[in-house]
Length: 476
Ligand code: ADP
Ligand code: MG
Image (cartoon, rainbow, N blue to C red; front, side):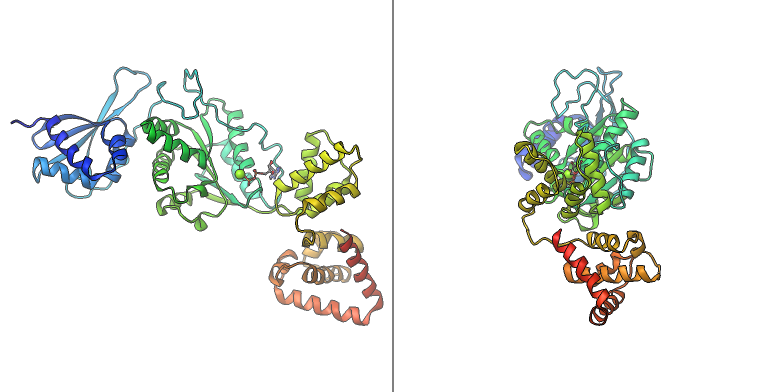
C-alpha cells in the first residue's frame, strides 16, 4: 500500500500515544494535521508558532524517532505553521520550518513572526462582548504613582518603575523585577506602572495578573483544550505585570508556558514587570532558565520604610480619606508599627473604627490603648529610628547629624547614647547598629557603649540625661 502523509502521520501518532500521557497527547498532538509527504519529508501543520516551539522543546526526540521509524533513516519532519492574520482572517498564512530533530541538533532559530491580533483570541479573564481586542487590564485604579510615597526604602524601584511606565519595553529594565517582604508596596508599585502606561497611552494592551491566577488559568486551559488561546492572549500584550512570581515554585508546566510567553514578549520588545518576595537569586523551586531571564533586566528591592516615610504614608492616606489626625498620633502609630506598611494602615483603620464606634476623639491615649491590642507582642521591640529620634530631640540636635561624620561634642554625645540604648533596648546586632549610624563598624559601637557606661559611673549630670531618655523610651 502506498504511503500517504495521513497514513504515515497516523502510524506516528499511534506510537506517540503510547509514550506520553493522554492529556498531553490531546493537547499537543490532536490539533496537528498531516499536510503532505514528499519523498522522505513529512510536513505536518501546527496551529501556531507556540505549538511548534513547544513540540520542538518537549517532543523532538520522540518525533524524530517515530518519523525515522516510518520513513527510514533519512526521514525528516517539517512544520507548517498557521499564523493567524487579523487583516485577512479567512486566509491564514503559513510558514514552513524544518524540525531541529533532523540530524544534527541545529541551533534553534528564533522566528520573528508576530502573533497577530485577531478578534478570535479568547480572553481568559472572560470579558463578554469583546469586539476589537480590548483588554481590561485588571488594574486597581487606586494604586498610582501619585499616592505612592517615595523614600530611601523604595527609591530605586520607584524610579525604575517610573522609567518603565514612560517607555514600556524601551528601557534596559526588562524585565523589571520588584522584590521585597510582604506589605511593602510591591503590588502597589507594579500596578502604578500599569495605570501610568494606560494613562499615557490608552491603546497599550496592559495586563495585570497574579502568578496564582495565571497558574489557574493555565490548568483550566489544559482542561478545556484552549491552551492556544491562553498563550495567544498573553503573547498579544504590550505590558504584562505578573505579581508574586515566587508562587511559580514547583509548578513546572506553568513555568514552561510562561517561559515561552516571556521569550516571545521580550523578543518583540514588550515590557515585563514581575514582583517577588525574594531576590531572583534566592527564589527556590524555579527553573534555572526562567530565573536567568528574571535576572536580565533590573531587580530592584523594596525595604522597610523608615519612620519619616511611614509617617508620610499615613498622612497621605489620611489626607486622601479626608481625616485629620493629631501629629502625635500619626507619629505614635508610625513609631510602633515599623515593619510593614499594610499593618500600619490596618492599625490606622482600626483606630478610626474605634473612635467612631465609641464616639471618642482620636488622641494619643486612644491610640495607645488600641495599639496595645493590635501589637500582639506587647513587649515589642523599640526601633533604632525611634531611639535616635528621642535622643536627638532631647539634646535638640538634628537626627541626620548622629548619622554623619561630625565629631562635634554634643553630636558625639547624642550618637554614643543612642548606640548604647540601641544595644540595650533592641535585639539588633552591633554591626547593624553601626549601619544605622552612617555605616560605622561594630568596634565603634562597642567603644560608644563603653564610654557611656564609664560616664554614667563618673558623671552625675550625664547619668541623669541617660535616665531621662530611658524613662521616655519606656513610656512609648
Ligand atoms: P506587597 O505587594 O509588597 O505585599 P502592597 O503593595 O499590597 O504590598 O502594599 C500594602 C499596602 O501598603 C497597600 O495598601 C499600599 O497602598 C500601601 N503602601 C505600601 N508602600 C507604600 C508607599 N510607599 N506609599 C503609599 N502606600 C504604600
Ligand atoms: Mg502584593
